[in-house]
Image (tube, rainbow, N blue to C red):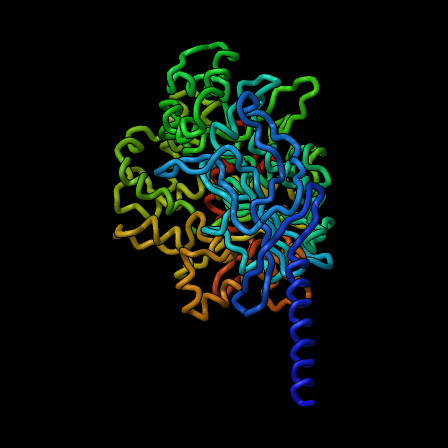
Length: 557
């Protein structure tokens, strides 16, 4: 009798185990519009489980004779698609060639397949030249505790941003990839426990340029509800391309086909392996572009109008920003406290060039309106503002970082914020100042350089939001770093949930809403502080230069 009872208990327990196993496996099969997806489980730092669904094809890549065109609708599949490994990244060369053109994948990370959890969609940076949505940099373990997280790939450089100003190749293919991903997410995210009516798009560097371009684009209406722009906006010189058609012909010439015929050029470029169409930014830059501005050149463009062609951008973002056409979204945006540490090594190696040609520090937007003589005078004014009546030396590395940060990021972030706030609220501005062992980019850039530079450089903030193999050891070994990550991710995810990064239940300091009068911001650090008008003196100096040139500026608005 005892043996029989034991066998019966064992049989019942075994059935229960099998039933739970099947339930768990079935729970990881999600049915989207194109078919079934098999996901995988993983574990967060607190021991809880989350689900991942990787390499989901949100669109078909246009290949062969369709190369450079907008993405095609996603195909359905039969059976269950394995979504347990990352797909190919988009073709790029970062010391070596990687990826392929068949790369239009997104990844979804969620703690539950049920309910309606706020969604955050991350658009990666990388100068529109490199990058992907994979977890080498953008691991989900910090953010997915609070939201459904989506990361994605989009076409880059020539393959993503070639424009010959024709209906066939008007430009912005990479941005239209992003739009296709946003549409797919809107239609399917509820299947992963996400709320399609509470979607925040966020990005860093050109990812931030991208999300602020989406504010202006008529293609993205209804696809998201909040925006976070980290170290980038749509009105920076490095956010919008100029002279794209002539650049396309320089691509052909560099690769062996010197022609002024658009059809011949496209036929030639479509005949080449994808690898040949990467790493062409420097090779196709003009002499002026080699020293003025940042290196990205294959960028979003204002498209020419063609019948039956939907444009991603039909007007300059600065025009849209000042008009009633601009759509209104709750917005968080800002910059890091020492952005241009990323540029200091290169700049110190070219001091003679910049000392002899001060006009190279005049932004492209201004330079296009000035004679060479006036550009030289303005370049000298810029230098005088930072160091007085002398030339830069290597001992000026700290002030050079400040100047380059102001030139490339700080001023135009303030200008964008001010202009947008005239039509929209709430806006929350920040300066990110953390300087810890999570500042991976800064450590990588400075390396063995004997430079005493404090603060957070371009890209350092990413490691306070995303788990990464590059900072894994530091994070796991230092409790204070875990606390800092928790602090930053709470700000970001509270905004995604409530449109307020410091809701009523949060402890002080409260993050002030930015207005044209108070210019409020939060300095995000170990001890965060609220303030008014960050970098006031330098912002007012640069604003004077823009106003004098007749460009939209803060003082004249």
